[in-house]
Image 1 (cartoon, one colour):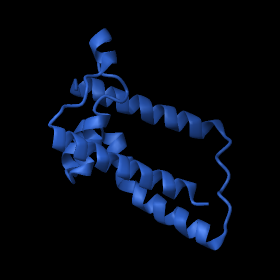
Image 2: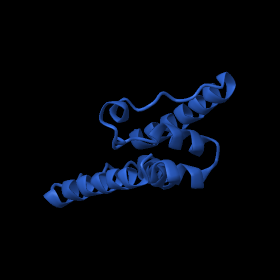
Image 3: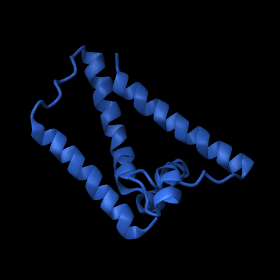
Length: 122
């Protein structure tokens, strides 16, 4: 079963639905509660506005709102195609990296994204 492809398609449909609702009802996304409490942006600040920009085809604006989310969304068609090919051929999913380096790299990427959000003062 192409679970990754289904998740990517579901996320894309969710973004399109969110953009349609926001555009139709002319509402703004809610403010970040973390930022209201502590005065600094959270790790995901700008994520909703990034998704709205992506759904509207405004890639440059999406990167300004949340660079990591925009990068992942930009690369997701490749992951979708890989997963569909893997499922079509009947290949199993490759094992996840078991070393601590993968976890450390993921945490470093998330922290770097947060530092970027803090520097921008979103």
